[in-house]
Image (cartoon, rainbow, N blue to C red; front, top):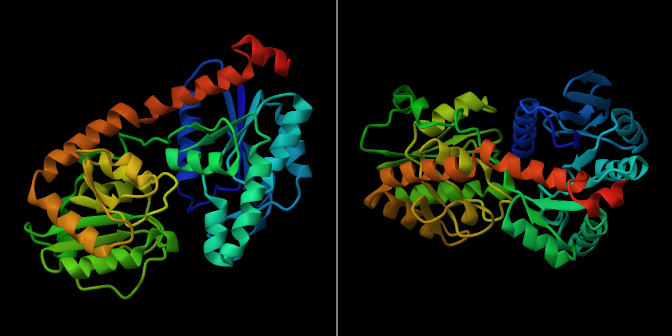
Length: 371
């Protein structure tokens, strides 16, 4: 079977989608009888298997992202690759190229709905755009042979929009890269934190939807005895006395050391589509304090952390105090065990491959449809 992923969500500072695609590429490469290519925008046309690039315009202030304008070069690239199945990871120009190539090749096309397009655009352009974008999402995703969503909350969103048959395909985490063994006491020493101070951490982009101001307000409420370290790009410069930040983008290895060296993850996002950093923290042996909303509430099962009222710094601070009042280290161990059992890439990717096999002909109805 030859699998091709196509997306513009692939850049040096990319988040969960790139993590998913690279883990998927590594896992598929270790399986016999499978070929995999990743078709993404780049500065020029190149092929360095499994990565294939076609030229696209860089987005201004886009942190390395490039936006394809024309479908034709991407249709031609897919026709040249001759996949048995195509998966499209974004909702812009490239999924339309994937659908056309799939029609010409008579192969199934999967749409993976990683990001909530109406919400993302609506927060910038205003809620007047929601109805138009909801209609667009319905129009696009009803055309795929299979639609995947990374969480129940995203699947329900698509179903409300009128997209039938959505299946939940969770992402995973590298449980060797993110592991308690990477704990480094020197990182706490660098922050000047004594052994009695609880070190909280948040890792991710300092984007609006991450609700960083709520985390800062939470830390002002908590005061002495608690310290929050922010890891990621575009974090605010003016911080309370008990908050620090790393400078810019860090490697995955550096993030893993910071997570393993902290006491708990503090997460303020209330509309996460998945929340990969939650799994990375749990794999690192940390309990999580987050919002009872979005996909984070699906990941933080009882015994692995505590959930606060959405968008409430007071509730978040209460949950932090409650966490450290009783059994927080046991929660971290249970969080690690939960991720090992349910979210290691070796657990989630076989399910994805089984979906591909069903679409490409492992049952007679699918084989008849696709020839």
